[in-house]
Length: 395
Image (cartoon, rainbow, N blue to C red; front, side, top):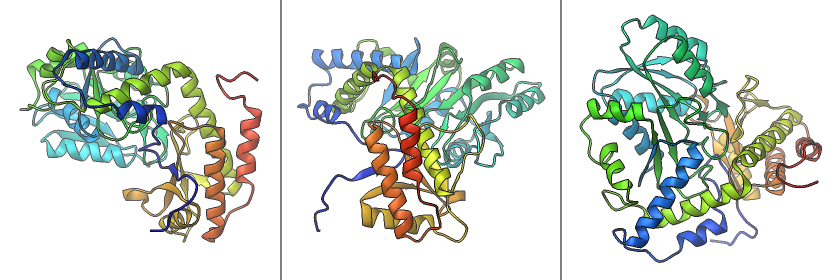
């Protein structure tokens, strides 16, 4: 295979590029996961993740993908036949709903058009209609990776409370955590699901459940038969920094380093950086004369931007041209929007030059693939960046 010079631009919305510091931390020799050195590492990783979720509650770390953490969330608090309320924000909300049904949970799905986050008013209406309180949980995707839309989680909690409903609030923040603001305790979340390969800037391989006291109590009295995913077994041994089975030791080394990097920058600065890059990307899309899939102001994601292709043009053919000619990977459209959109990831280890380089690749690829567009998207993004000071950097 012929060597391609220059670095590859991985601009999918996760897995995101892994910083050199994290790679070096992960390259340490494997240690005894029952020894004292690992106990210190485990405690540091678990405590650090509480600061990222912004919680005093327990955070559980699994050697799994985010899909495993989805299942853990459902299996610990729900049993077969239980009702849950879910909201169709896109592909991943749909997959979580399908998983619930496979587990025997009755998932009531509020339909959406994939162009915005969840609507708290609709959630409140459904809960008010459930006068017998049969719905055990409300499940919402925080940042819908397929569409680039964000759900207002704090407003969803207020809707649950306004309805006077005891349902647990369960949130998928797999692609949102450590990229856009998330406040587990303040927003009254009961279970949060996340993964390593997005804003945490790690390879895929570990996932998380943040679990409120209310959810832990529900798990003691309810739930499905479970072993690998059992919270209680995890919580008991996590208190000393250990795990009930072999953990992903070197991933935890990388996790501790990634958490340190996030706090060195400051979480608020991290969030502001992502929002600034997202706004610059949307400026580029508008200048190209293309349309952003998310069309509700205030719901636009800081993690990625999903771009609609002109009628009659293949997003997959465009992405293939971008990769072949400019060595840039862009996210594909999924299920309902397959071949109709492409996704520009702007999360994790990224700065202004990374973004401008990526947008340059997109603009050149639009020309190479003969996609109708106006020139000047990169210039529009640069103008936005120049007019908006970079957070955390002195002028």
